[in-house]
Length: 121
Image: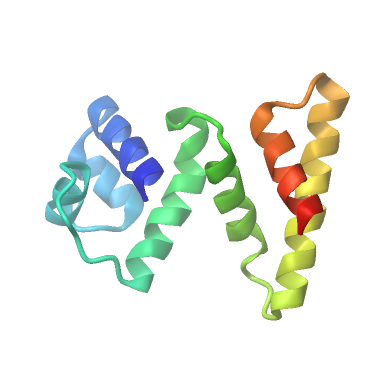
């Protein structure tokens, strides 16, 4: 959640609290508390809204790192009902991402870390 909070802070600084809240489908008062670091209730719908917004907004607001990439891959494979199917989809997406980066040059550290974790099981 800290990566999402940081991205939300950056988005609000670039735009406005009201605009970002609308993009997230959140109340302005809730978002204000969230970006100020106050403890806020994170129900499942709230988490889903935050993650969906983050996936849409992250390319402009967040640095690429292992945790962000893992969350994005989990989000992308999350629509599959069976755990085994989600796990297999996560692996295939990660492998495709690794190949794409390898084709363009050396793998970034966060890609290598995810691939290493996947190999380790």
